[in-house]
Image (cartoon, rainbow over all chains, first blue to last red; front, side, top):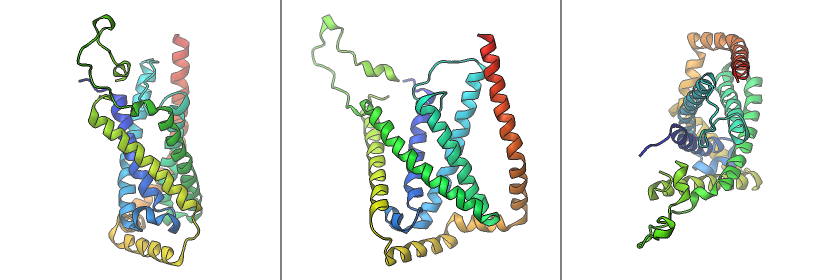
Length: 170
Length: 100
């Protein structure tokens, strides 16, 4: 079984985004605290550790895109998180904004409170947009949720045995 | 891979997670409050995070001299680095267009 690099990165990114989402939104304010039962400490731990993994995956993906650009590889990678147009470009921009503002929040709480406040505002509102975009993305790709049909007991010889078209996706 | 039942379970789980998360965020936004007990619980959570979580560790590190200097140095070189990155990207794209 051959698993593609862009496929693995896509799902790793999804898992990390889920962890960042639940822990991040639980820290937005007192109204949101119930999401993680007001356990701010756990949310903080999970958010910081997942953020490190998020930055690593983003860095690897950017390096891979640069490598492809240098090699003049223009093949469209359907599963890759970053790309040159559409939702992939949106993900790239949003990821960079989230990383930069996240780093500012982490760094500037001691150095400059104004910068940290502005970064917090941008980080929060971009997260809302990103979460809405994820729901839209899932809706657009909902064919991935369709359960595979069981193989037929008697394959039809004239039609070549009912080959599933979605198998060619990965 | 996409046709494996366990992977379908995983996709369903993640999808459901994101739908519940967005529902939770919408509920949090639109619900009245925060109530006094919610604020108290949140503040207590924050206070305990200062002692038991990475937040406290990070704050102690940031007040240390070496890390502060590294951060200041990083913020000085970040703008030239970003500019160099953009210039590099444009160069690569121009070169690729020129070779077509």
